[in-house]
Amino acid sequence: MPRTPENTGPFASIPAGTVQLRDARSSSTRAVALVPFEIGTTPVTAGQWSNPGTMANPQGSLPAHPVTWFEAIHWCNGASIVAGLKPVYDINDREVVWDVGADGYRLPTEAEWEWACRAGTAGPTYGPLENIAWTAADNVEKPQGVALKQPNGFDLFDTIGNVWEWCWDYADTARYGDYRSLRGGGWADKRWSCRAAVRRGSAPDALLEDVGFRVARGAVGEPGGTVAQGWSAEADRRRADIRGPLPVGWTPLRGLLKSSGSLEGR
Image: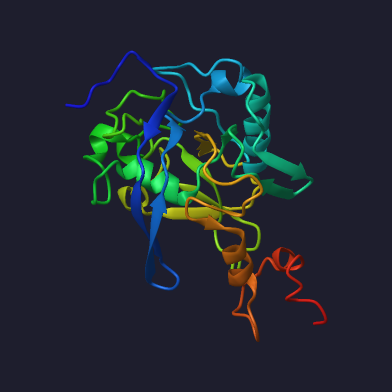
């Protein structure tokens, strides 16, 4: 049985590797090669949220929730400053730019999140849900304390169940505008929503009761770069550049394309 320490360390070192990401809309997969990184062993707790000067996450602490994507981004920068690290995000109102060469706290990319969640496993979960995750099957009415169920092979707790976790990536710049991705499932979700590959998206300013976040740490690219850990600014722009009539309900994130000029003159 995996160990369940009384007090978890705040971060785990995740080795390099390759993860297969699935795109349900296009029914395609892509292989993402990742460099080593660090990620929180639990979602950010309420104590960490109110006091980013301490990164301790004792067993049983409640995860911070509800938290918007923008709030999580601002918290990451503030926690980086307190820790003497270089803030990762340049924030200008709703525009957020990630410096992939900065060493501060940040949201993981979806590829990082899934690789860390799977911890070398290939199935939908890294263990029986009743042992590893708080879900609808537990009949709880709110988030539960972190690290009360079994960790995965990287000693990460609650990656599945308890609260959904924000990631850096857009959900789909062609279809959902500026929606950002969420991973992992929550305490009220059925088992089919609590799997390593399941993704959900929501507006970055949406305040959702079942949403929290987990932070990564460290530089994963060159300063000023726009590609890292499965994410690419250019890929975001290409995906948003939909030509011709749009399917009903699609809202491409046109603003992404302004810097490239590909929408100028339309």
